[in-house]
Amino acid sequence: MQPIAKRAVRMPAAEVLAIWQEYRRSGSREVRDRLIFTFMPMVRFIVYRKVREVPAQCDVEDFLSCGLEALIHSIERYDPEKGATLEQYAWTRVHGAVLDELRRHDWAPRSLRRDERAINNARTSFVALHDRQPDRAELAARVGMTPTELTGRLDEVVLAEVGSLNRIVRSDESATIERIDTLESDDHDADPIVSAERREAKERFRKAFARLSRQERAVAVMLYVEERTLRDIGEHLGVSESRVSQIHTQLRRRLYEQLSGELALFSTVA
Image 1 (cartoon, rainbow, N blue to C red):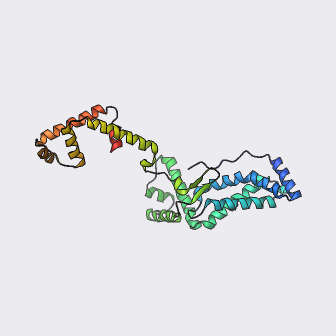
Image 2 (cartoon, helix red, strand yellow; image 1 turned 90 degrees about the vertical axis):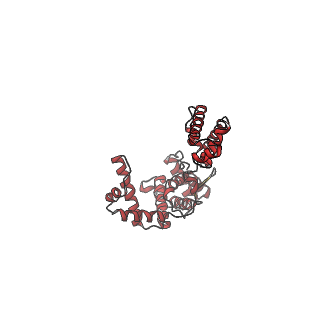
């Protein structure tokens, strides 16, 4: 996942106030748009900071629209006589509007979210104190639940997050990011570096394997690919079981000699 949008360099409060006063005098839409443009990075910052809390069935664009609407209302209702700067006033209004939108779209009741926060805080404090993750019983004890109650509560949290992996969590001029793009993949083939290393490893192994004698290659294939027993292999080759064992030991030694210093190669190829 890409980092959340950073807030732009702030315009001095006096300059913002001067623009706002010009808007109040003229009612010019162009002047108001200057204020909107000035504070849109703040809106994005607030929304993207809350991205992880956005319900899975919702689109982050909905929250950006909500924040923009709150920003416009802030510009219209701002009163400098109350002591706050326009940025401070807009921040409070936008942040509140985004939180309200989160609550409105959230399937989970507030009691579940409260328990979820308590469980997460208990887990964090336990790790800080003991330098390890708590087991289910230890975590349950810290939040005043039985292990069964804790399991049920966590299952409810998971169910509350069900939604589309194609939901957009960020969209701007440079890229559109969907929920699935933020998930870590355990598919090593999806990593081009790992995939290239694996191809190279297999190629080097094939070359080393090709240098074995025909009998050694036959034993390796029957033992590791066809999964035959030593006795079956011996009968097929017309040699004793102990001779097959010797050939096997010999071919392994030759492979290790050719691939000396690259023992990790065998686990990569496996």
